[in-house]
Image (tube, rainbow, N blue to C red; front, side, top):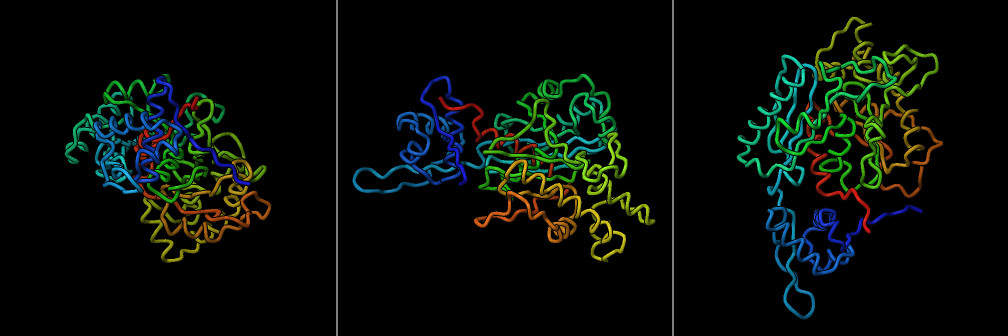
Length: 396
């Protein structure tokens, strides 16, 4: 039996912000919707809902969306999300480049920009991020007061951990620097810092194939291979923000050596680095996603060989994810061409012994998510949007 957990409101004054999130989330999921229905779904009093909807309308987050007549009495006012009422900034920071995206309250992309970095030190990155924010808001014609916050995506793992050398994309001089405090000081808005896989997972829920799903996993082809986990609508981050280092799960005992110190890590078989290295061993150099797209269209023998080799350990890892997290689906996406991702998904020989083999499935075991250079930046913005709608405290 599938368990469903409803998020309800609380009439305690101390949970006012929580109640705003509850109401906003219900409007997003059921719009257009009236106050009586919101009260029924949330467990809040009708008066509390009236106060909150009036406040959200005044703040620009909600619009009236007509009136509905039911029986006697005055027609009930219906509410819908005001997509242009607020915005979020998403930024992905890499050693030599930065991607920025401005997203509205409905998860729609308003502006994007790619910016080259000459160095990735805290001072240089913060200065570039501030300029990026200024350019994007100016182009979109919005006021800074409409910005909910910024989601910054940086390479993991965060802190000093036992995966020595695991990060093949390190930023300069960030050891000992608190990125949240640093970015909030230079941007002047609330900041969330996250890894790319988790950011991409949240992006899928805000505006992708995970819309309407509450528990799912996202296998992300980024700097390495990461895993984003959303359970009951909440992001699983781990004790130190490093949950989801999927690339360093050993899938072949005593297999290929990995930079982290292990042998047989998934990342050495199924990742952007793995395909690049395999092609290089066959005398083929690739510099971009477009190169991989072209090779696939040409059915290049070396690339097709890698796809066959990568599919086996990837399927094994997905089976492991299914049994560990019991997700509604596993999404695969990131900085890989759509045609390669589709090929991998279509040819996966998933384990038959899995919790995911259910006769009542309404969603495929594996779906393709968003891909491309902006995926993580859009995910950073989605983190802010997600937190706007998703309560983090339990109702009393």
